[in-house]
Length: 210
Image 1 (spheres, helix red, strand yellow):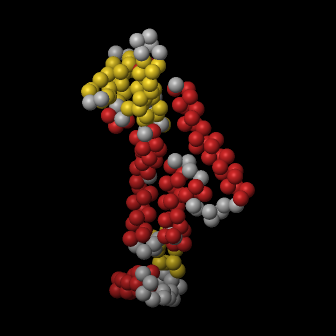
Image 2 (cartoon, rainbow, N blue to C red; image 1 turned 60 degrees about the vertical axis):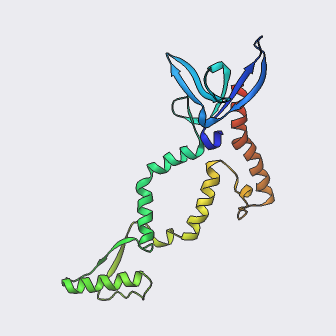
Image 3 (cartoon, rainbow, N blue to C red; image 1 turned 180 degrees about the horizontal axis):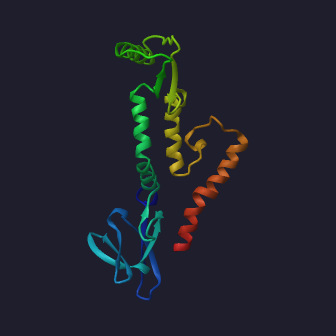
């Protein structure tokens, strides 16, 4: 629930003496924390009824939080980061639509007429779309603006997407069968790192909450 929705809620059921009888998971999508007159309550649907629970009746495990009350899932946190990079994403998408050709200018030592400029532009665009070989003569020089074409490799970008998904949840790459850079030695290290940096923070948070 925490990884998918950012919050996990557990109803602490007690007997008449106040002793804990059961720990009952609540549906995270139907449970919401509410601040009312400075006190924290939880509104949820339990056994078909809408009820309100005090904060000491609910164990709340949450992900990254901006207000300390409601958590975000790793996916939500990553989405916020990606949305903040919207301009960079748009730039990359436009580059792919242009066959990965970066922006650039052709400089000429002499002055060209409009017809010559248009002919040169058409020839250069055709060459960069893979139709022919570009030939620059009469002192024509190409000056690139922006990223190099070789920096945008489709296969690398696809592999990066897989790695990004794993990184969202802090999952070592060998656990998703990406063994390109794996050895027996570093897999053992990564397994220890997985326990320390992926599992232990959640386990510690659960321990403190209970």
